[in-house]
Length: 160
Image (cartoon, rainbow, N blue to C red):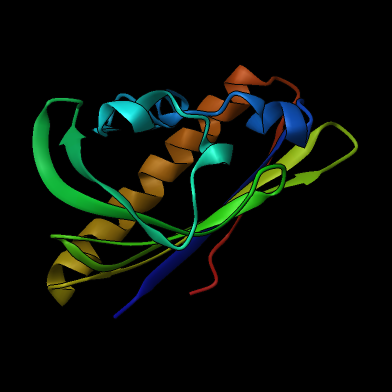
């Protein structure tokens, strides 16, 4: 059974500036201290806006607290638009489906960042256990972004 949630934050930064230097290191800063993603050397420093869409990019260890391996994620971007967002459709040992869309839209204060995540675990009971964990990690990511770009507002929706 798929689990979906959506979180939004208004940040005091323009969409172009938000994406200008975004790298995997920035993603890992958002995920800290809960998890960290590994990547082959070329992907660690390449700006996300330059990553190609439509093909498998790399396999990433998901490390709990940055050190304990808990999953292997096969990363694939379906769509990336450098100033407005991306759609990722990946799989992992744990999840048959990992769909993450990030939208970055202009607002009066800067931009609104919205993350929509849908997961479907390979074992349904594991999906039920992990759904609140994933939501908590993304809530933490948004708190980090609001601290990094003060003047932010938060919103959240749970479509199902």
